[in-house]
Image 1 (cartoon, one colour):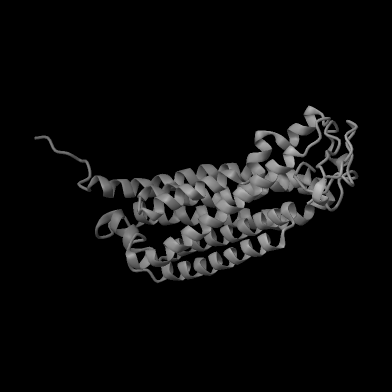
Image 2 (cartoon, one colour):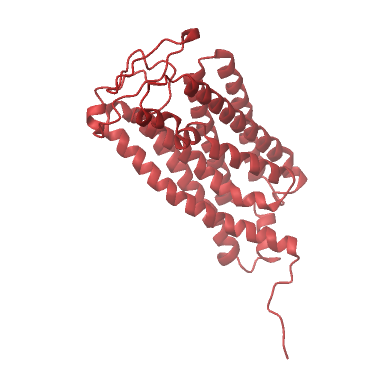
Length: 321
């Protein structure tokens, strides 16, 4: 007599469980990349005295991201292993136990990481644009997002139903929407400014020097494009109540730690964009700063041919960003 051992859950229920299970694996893989980037950032910071100021940010982002993935793994472990006999199975556990401390901790660290990530990007926007009204606008949106994130954490801590229940969605959807809008706008603002500055580079700049600023790698990292695209994709899925949004939650937390650390590495090494570095920096290839219209200076390179970062410390101006 043959019988099936497959689950009796509907395809939608099965997809919901699969998305939660796969999300932790995706987040763990991203954490592995985060480990490498974090240690690279710390190494670069210790090699240059001016880079030590970035260590608290890198440590905070990495610590939050580590706690987040650990708590997410613990929450899954409870559902699949420790409390496997929970009435209704893992599906009911995920739907009814959102208020457990491990899940609240994961939610809180996710929100805190987003705040630090956004604050850093606002700092970079201010450094490149130098427009007070733009900085104030982004700060106001960040404060609103921070308030919603706190309320969302409180709501999750008190939740007695699924994350997709309307009472829970009442704050989580506005929070996800506003945070996504902020991340996307910051990414667009940075990309726009980077493209504008890259067009102002003098044609006589050596190809090796120009590549450090105008390469695809430089543009993608300094515009925070990966985080912007991932956040937008998440908002669309979450807003339509698609369980596929679960796949991006732990990954986004790691990405919001990785991107600032990559930018920090470029800042420490003297490769980050700034609007007024040409007046104080001249590279060995003979390119000297040329004053642009509106008081903006062309970005000039530190000696790119010198791979010794210790020697760069004496050449990089303190006001690079």
